[in-house]
Amino acid sequence: MTEQQLIELGRSVLTTEADAISALSARIDQSFTRACQHMLACKGRVVVTGMGKSGHVGGKIAATLASTGTPAFFVHPGEASHGDMGMITSQDVVMALSNSGETGEILTILPLIKRLGVPLIALTGNSQSTLARNADVFLDVSVAKEACPLGLAPTASTTVALAMGDALAVAMLETRGFTADDFALSHPGGSLGRRLLLHVADIMHSGEQIPLCSSAASLSDGLLEMTRKGLGMTGIVDAQNTLLGIFTDGDLRRCLDKGLPDVRTTTMAEVMTANCKTIQPQLLAAEALRLMDKHKINALIVVDRDKQVVGALNMHDLLRAGVV
Image (tube, rainbow, N blue to C red):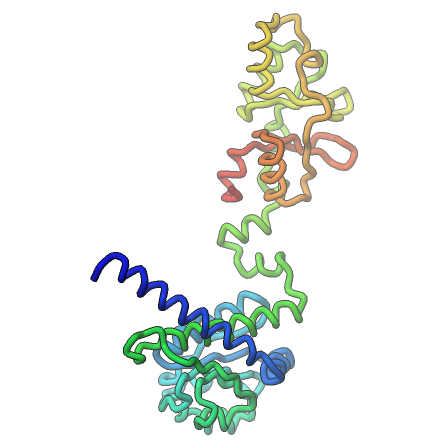
């Protein structure tokens, strides 16, 4: 098979699946609304089940629901017949995935689901199937054809089922007023969680770690303070600890470019950058990163609402915290 033939095959699969999802859009109707209403009214959890490839898709749908504010988990239908039905309570909603709607393992537990009296949402490609006919809500996830040229491997059908699951999850997210902060609480270990949960106060240097000197201090004293604290800068403050300016490694290079100043007689007030960029401790660390990127700087002095210095941080602190 030539390189061009492989490219055409790949594009054909994507076109088939894109067409299947596009056709799905017209089926977002009152049945979709009822499915959402059942999940919103659920006092327990959404229990997702499916066999084979549908099971893999169901696992992802359950994970997406759970991470976006709708408590959910996946139950394998084969295991449900051997004890795991006990995981489903009368407070739950069951979502079953089966392209044919005749999956034996799901049909086996169907009477038990009905006996519990829990709402059953069926995602199937066969409107006349046993599963569709016994569901409280039938969501049509049929496809005109599979992307597999043999028409055997679930391809377009699993993509469409996954897309329907995403549509339900996002509808739930919006309806519940789920926020970025809520999402971060579900993902504390990931980089997204760190961006949304870490505040400047969590990673800044404070107390004796803050590089500071007075405006009357010599440039020599300022350089020694920068060396001792190791943040590549020092804040310049008055007697009340109010920030007056900043002096950074970049400022030093610019001083040298203009001509070497006398480090003993030159004061920090003469070389500092006044009206420097600052950040407050209660803001997100991600905001500190945004400020640094926007203004092409590598460090920030942290001040309170009265411009009193309370901390300092640089790009290395953000890197260590995993914000970058």
